[in-house]
Image 1 (cartoon, rainbow, N blue to C red):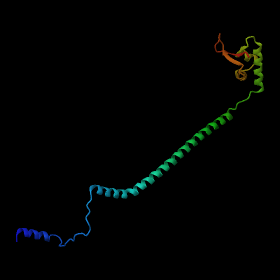
Image 2 (image 1 turned 30 degrees about the horizontal axis):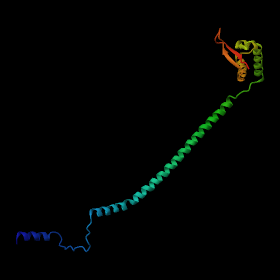
Image 3 (image 1 turned 135 degrees about the vertical axis):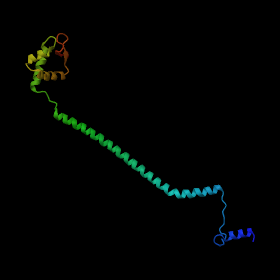
Image 4 (image 1 turned 90 degrees about the vertical axis):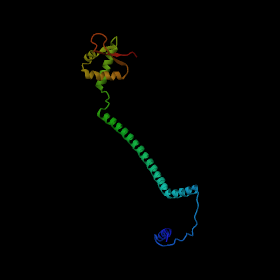
Length: 175
């Protein structure tokens, strides 16, 4: 035998000795575009459930964001309402702790005495020291009476222009 025959024989004896029958199926010839379209459709079909799930999750997140925004808005409203309630409560407590006191008969009487005294003076003014001597009261009681007169808007307080600049003068304003 020749070398070529031996080689052919060794090749033919290599591996199992089975005869492969040709397939009965047809072979398709596809263009690159057709193959790309088939692959694209297969990928789209494979990922469609994932895309649907992502859309559902995004919708859920959007609803949760709306709920959170609504809760934050409600929380801000509650905080504002509480702050106002606290402010109103503090005002009420302050009024209870420091009530606005109406002037008593004695204070009104002192105010009337000061008014008559200033009306009788030609310049319609007097120092606080003079008024204290006229009423025979201390500084606190004098200030209470003067406070009543100032509230009427017909009196003002001035500082002395000459002499002791610390002295204060009550002046009856012209009507």
